[in-house]
Amino acid sequence: MKKIAKVVLTSVSLGIIALSSGCAVVREQQTVGTYIDDATITTQIKSRMAADPVTNAIAISVETLKGEVQLSGFAKNASEKSRAEVIARDVNGVKRVRNDIVVRP
Image 1 (cartoon, rainbow, N blue to C red):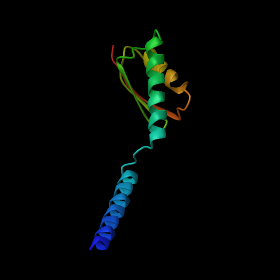
Image 2 (image 1 turned 180 degrees about the horizontal axis):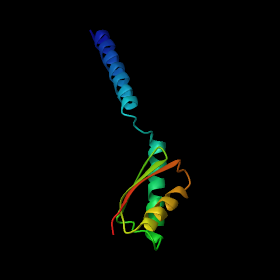
Image 3 (image 1 turned 90 degrees about the vertical axis):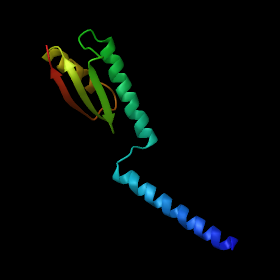
Image 4 (image 1 turned 90 degrees about the horizontal axis):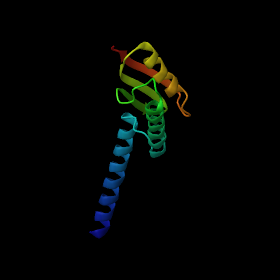
């Protein structure tokens, strides 16, 4: 009886592992290393924006996924929007920047 229980438990465990790893691929979850890299990129961009006299770091949101940065939020003028993109592009590890910042005076 114990032998059957071990076989069933092992089979169920392997099935759960197989299903959960399949879900990770479907949902495109990040590895821990990629998540840390993306968090580092986001932090560097936000801190550079905070130190920059042209950009308002509070009004601009930064999200990073696999090295691709998305900027969103509001800028007072086109030069602030452009400057935020330049700051993001200058950070090491950034592959692409999508600038969805809206200019709103």
